[in-house]
Image (cartoon, rainbow, N blue to C red; front, top):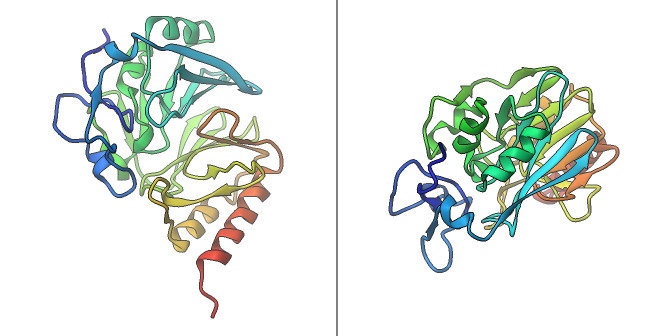
Length: 266
């Protein structure tokens, strides 16, 4: 049964397991507390004026979001694989109609989330579909609603099966992860690798809202880990934020551009 009364931070959209005065995720320097101070909502309130949004975002990839959007406004992606669907990233919103629509698409066998800003209502989704949630061990302390559904993994990569591999890129958060889908030749990056408005490029930031650049050594490590994987598309965190072709080269040349501006050569 959904816990519709649990607090959800109005700024980042993460649901907590119990009432509290603060949101540690927003108080971290990578996020921010809303200009009107810490504010809370609940699923019960969100359900009063929103509905689920379900739209195709690519071959066997379905976007899952809310209208109007909540908090940061990201959308999740349902990867429809032969061995079961994987939900990549997360939103704060869920209701019975959205569960029904996702069930009609084959449901959710596993959930994986790029980083803490997108944890949303991940436990509600996990319970609705009896699905594990894969989070990197390095981000354990940011899980706002601890639950047995959360599976913490460690190391550089983790196989979800069926050609799906989580990679701990470590950009933005130490546990920041991306998902490679071999058969679709696609990389799902959230905003670990941010697909920018010029959709032939991505970027890398320690904090997006506060414009703190990522460390060059962190970006180089991420590139080394991604080198073995081929991909044409890069799916970012928001609707239509997708690099449609030449994705691997787009990531490489984007990193070269970023590092050229980040490093002082004088």
